[in-house]
Image (tube, rainbow over all chains, first blue to last red; front, side, top):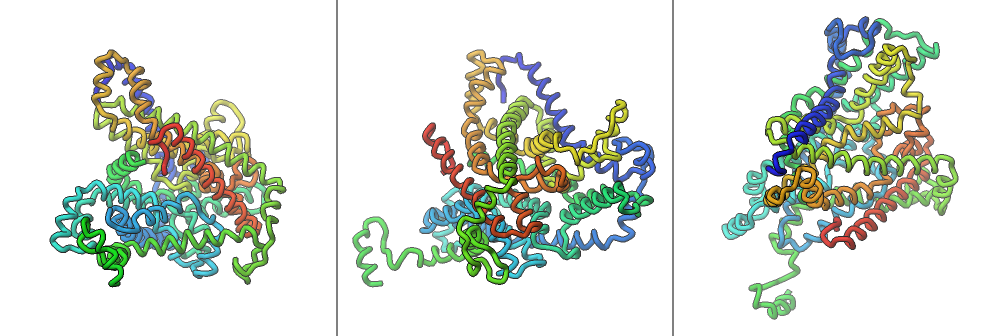
Amino acid sequence: MEFGTGKGKGVKIFSYIVLALFALCCIIPLLNIIMISFTDSSSIDTYGYSLFPKVLTLEAYELLFENPTTIVDAYGVTLFVTIVGTFLAVLIGVQFAYGLSRKNYVLRNQSSFYLYFTMLFSGGTVPIYILVTQYLGLKNSLWALILPYIVTPYNIFLIRTFIQGLPDTVFEAAKIDGAGEYTILYKMVYPMCKGGIATVTLFYLLSFWNAWYPCLLYINKSKLYTLQYMLHVLMGKIETLNMEVANGMAVNYFQQLPEDSLRMATCLVAIGPLIVAFPFFQKYFVRGIAVGAVKG
Amino acid sequence: MENAEKASAGTKGTTKKRKFPKILHKDQLELFSMMFPVYLQVFIFCYIPMAGAVVAFKRYKVSKGIFGSPWCGLDNFKFFFKSMDAGRVIRNTLGYNTVFIILGIICAVFVAVLLSMIRSRKSLKFFQTTMLFPHFMSWVVVAYMLVTFLDYKHGMVNSFLVKLGLEKISWYYEPKYWPFFLVAIYLWKTIGYNSLVYYSSIINVDSTLYESGAIDGCNTWQTIRHIMLPMIKPTIIIMAILAVGNIFRADFGLFYTVPQNSGTLISVTDVVDTYVYRMMFVTGDIGIAGAVGLIQSLVGLILVSVVNYLAKRVDKDLGLF
């Protein structure tokens, strides 16, 4: 994009500086976690947390992997919920979006409103909680972390926008060749909308991976904790312990353990896959945002 | 079926023949079956709970279920509004969200405009990637990040204070700082994502507009002021409508896990969603939680409708529906 009369050099430098500062703010907290997880506990005690620790060590990770059952369980649960949840969400979401995009479907407008209304009004957390626990009996079931969350209206409307971007003639030709709707969807729309569907898949992956509130509501067996919820519980435990130690109610059993670095190491292990995958996701994300923005 | 055939004979001109109700055609049935899983899921997890919202008018007993529990009129609502929590919860929710909406839009548009000044693809990609990063982190992880700064014993902020010869501060026990923290954290997490929304509508503006601006001798500021901002106004308004509709909804994670559910901070961190959670699981009063949840949804519905109506009166193309 070219604009302005070439006097914009100052503006450009200003933009670079502000954006660079903002980018730094976005990244530093992560660097903190990484560095603390590698910091030796005695240097934490003497100097506090630092981005440039005096002594680097792997002791937190050694301790973490010495007794990895909790984190391995949590990984298993998170992977199961994320993979199954995303798979189901994309499967039924794309089918619904395809129906919404077919101009000849008689229930098209009604279906659109049926879904849209749920964005405007909901019964609230309480009835959903009672439904899931009392009537569906899903307390302490991983399905409680999946089934209520596999439909996200925004994502479905986004897929519809992607599908509507395809040329109509393609569908007409397929129809003339006698292809059914399922064939058109799976043989033509899927390959042609790869980018769009990938984007929405990532949206779902991210939301399932990061979800901890469902676990707070529905799960109280520690074997079924997701990674995020495990982190939440771990933080609470350390805080209560610190408080009790401060109030003289408990002896700090963890005095010798590298509790700070251990907690950050756990955090890093939990978000590791996300950070590794992030640069690859990013492209699809930006595209999804762009399409969503145009449509509103 | 014969009748239907006869009836459709009149419209022969356009379509060849129309038999039984159109939904029963093979294509239509196929589409219906494709969409059925979502129909069902939404019915179970959205529409049934809407009926279940009557729990707000009930004295809920687990053994009797929602519909079997005795009615209690508006008692749950009265209890909430008479309690000392009501004022605090409503003030915090509306207050934070108002600040979030206003500052959120200003900052995100500002960053989007800055992004549009960057020509180099590499720099652009770098900025976009780093700015999106906070969006990928859950609130729990954000809470961990915050601890690295605010921890009493080892936190970086306290270390810095000590270096300056000042007293350490127990951040998690001092309500007065938290309104600023919460706003800053909210902005940190959302600006990147939102600014990309505005950025994509900026680059969608027809580039001839900028060219003609340049020919007319617009400087950068004039271009932004008179071409860019008016062109992205619809996006700003749609984002604002969505946000206003959610003004009575708060991000549970931001207000619950980020301040580590600290009891001393409750005066500045208690919002509708944390209140509902506390009523459900700590106090155990399902009826009141249901009542507050219902108020939340109704307020949201009314606000979206009103704001949408107003936006449409200003300009027909604005508005969501």
